[in-house]
View (spheres, rainbow, N blue to C red):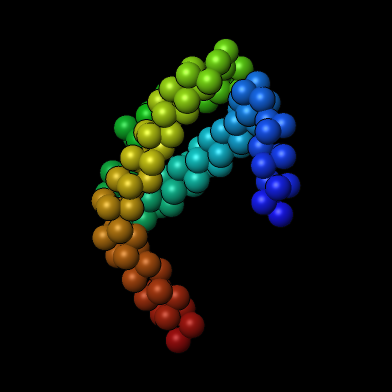
Length: 123
């Protein structure tokens, strides 16, 4: 088993490693964009129910990362690839963290309002 692992590892050249890293990085970055998009949408829904202003800066940051995300699959070398990944994913993770920390109280209030309306219509 260990021998098979080492044989597979020896078959990986730096070029093949970068090739597969580009694919994996592109897929994960796409997933990050989708997660941020829907998390911001849910946050805005909770904010609207609670009468608060919607997120605008977070959407601007998310959209600003899109051109950089498009460059990930064609990064010329490993250094450029990893720098692009950092420039794209760090803002995504900061958006997720910000929305979770800031919007939890609006989300909880929105949830209570939705549940109370549901109880009123079912009674």
